[in-house]
Image 1 (cartoon, one colour):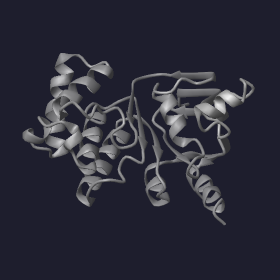
Image 2 (image 1 turned 30 degrees about the horizontal axis):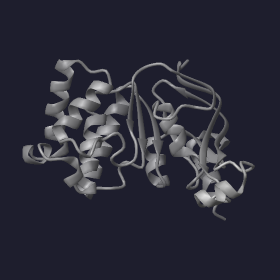
Image 3 (image 1 turned 120 degrees about the vertical axis):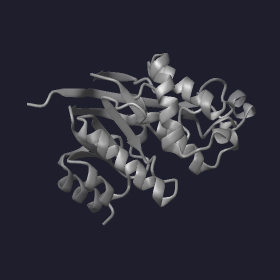
Length: 245
């Protein structure tokens, strides 16, 4: 029986956004303190999920359903309002293009920074740097340049290469392969398959059902911050498609 590597129990995430009734300092004063300048918006509403070791798990849902918020919470970027998350192993998050990358730093400096944050030692950081140089196909001149001067495709190459340099216990991929040329996308897909064969658990977000069905075996569909369905990939994909009809 497969062990559980991620256990999510009754997870809630709330954001504070600007109150539409308060558009200026004058509006705030004239409310005489009766209206708060911020209001709470519930993003995730009691999400519970189990991800098994070695499982390739798809996360589906319309834009705004809470997919990216859930992944960022799993990666430790967002603190949940309530609920519990238990993770067994090291997570390598490949979130939206540029997430976690410092634009003012060079490519090389970003490799060192992100690898350090992922808990790598000096030997592993050196190995990661070599891997990124080869896999990303970015030149040394590119990697010595500030990332703010990169194109979206170059940033994608850097971010993905760092994330998959070492085979993680858990890989999170959030629409990260939608930018870049076809050749690099195929290269990324091949690397994901290598990681998959190693027994790594993968949580994958994409609007491409063909891609999800090719990589994943099970999945879940989020609707308005709640899990609407979990199950085999074909069942969840069919449910997701039905939301548009």
